[in-house]
Image (tube, rainbow, N blue to C red; front, side):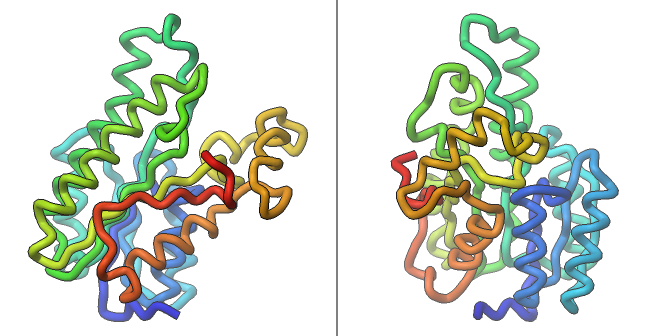
Length: 251
């Protein structure tokens, strides 16, 4: 098992879904964790409680990642409480299809890009400035960027830009032995749209059969498993990469 005792992690969008699972996993591995959230204070509190129950320290910090000043304040809060940061997971995002392109409004575009592109960019930028040498930066992307589908053009394009930043940033700060990678989940049970989707939801029924390994959707813990790999010693020679978490499905 990966040992993160003595390390500090910051996870954005950690009040539910994938971000919550990652934050709890890092805490279970021994890291102190800054749990970032934008609206769901109750969910963030649950994340903090789960991390503390595992024996690690945690704090909840409210921040709207679409506002660079609040991103900076988030990192300052982590620094003030824990003395630095070793792991940053840029997970916060708007998880909605966005609709067909001809119907997208300027307001739709601005809302999606404010969080998914702008927010991720400035989170990754601040991570590069703040993470201690030898640390890890991870961006949580989307498989829609690998094979865009009708109705997902706005969402997929907003998630694609940070994936490019990951590759450039890996080269820019690699001399500090900081790894920068992206995890690319496919449809994930318990995350985003699927938090509220019932068992008979047509998209859920369809995605349950994507993987050749078994008739199930990916889980938030499947994503946390890959994050655990990227923050551990086994991946110290892996940087600037994106790993598709799809159970063998092409996208």
